[in-house]
Image (cartoon, rainbow, N blue to C red; front, side):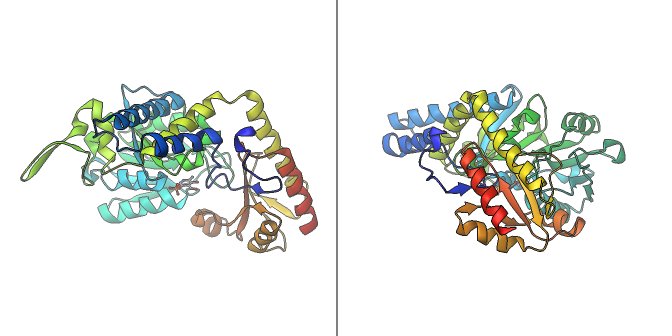
Length: 386
Ligand SMILES: Cc1ncc(COP(=O)(O)O)c(C=O)c1O
């Protein structure tokens, strides 16, 4: 794709699940900010600030549009990344509103550790749910009464999805609980699973979404009633007295400030807006090319009897190990051929190491930047190695 024309032929980047490559329009949007209106947002009245404000506001609206959510009920706040967003929410929830915290076994350390820290801080019980191989949760097996449920809707091991996400949210809400979705992996290539659902919060990382390094929390406004406000500072208040302050977030128009203390990453937020516009304009051919590439690679790996795939089905994210071959050594050998792939447990230590007892893995995670020639190269190099 032309928008990644800076990528040299023969350099094969297969770590999009960690950070996507940024297409030209995103890089240009950031450069524009630094070169043409490098100003603080939401505080300054001079003309550069006005441009920044308009573009930041546009990005908030684009996030909601991308997810098909209504601004009447939801607010978009920016943070550092998914991890920061999840921790920001869990660390401020009022323990007295809940009975327990629940997560699942296939989670990234980001929600997994944050849920452990929550249980330790509050003394509330914590439950780790099982996920079926297709990614869904057997709802009948669990009691969700006043539970905080923190789960991903697409895994960073093999992209498996929380197929019954809608039913889960309905059940948890009926039982007076809340659902916080880790959408780090879903936003770029599986956004459909997020559309038409109404969780209490969605946390994501823009850097996995063809955008700059940045995080986002999309949250239901009524979540505020179940939270304390403990992380405070500049940009969050309408008035301050000697021993008290009035939060701007009490007013719907400035609700986003609830999670945005201090100056924000204005250029990166604007870059996210450019990435969302770019994603929403892609053609069916662009998506088909991605699908052809990952299906080809999946079928190639599946055809080798020395390769053990974690994936049940083709996905842009594919994890595996090779019999008798150390994954880290394989990763080094690939790197020498300019193929950049991840090795290890990808921050899913509990599930991969302790539940499944697997050796470290190799992960190929593809993106829209990949060319058919990348896949041919990986196949040739892999054949030579294994
Ligand atoms: C499923 C999932 N959740 C959470 C995270 C954490 O993302 P970040 O490091 O951007 O906070 C990742 C990162 O790979 C992930 O794949």
